Length: 89
Image (cartoon, rainbow, N blue to C red):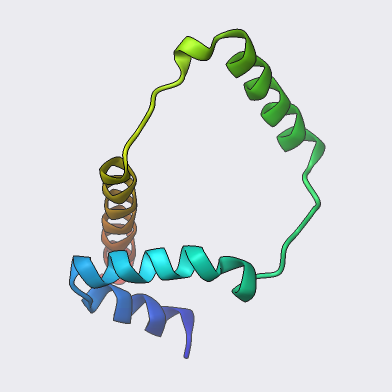
């Protein structure tokens, strides 16, 4: 099955099923994808900078709930679906 076929199948699913798939994929990501221990020096520097900022300014952090995560996943999936369908026109 091609990436395009998988994408089309996901786009055709109801949102509830896409959320279920997203949760399943996230839970099984380590089984499906090889892990890469390599981080570019640029990314490592950015991560270290952000960790330092968090340590120095914990008040900047904002807690979020499961509903927020589901909304972010849904928004990202919808944005991707719109982008993909616009590219096929």
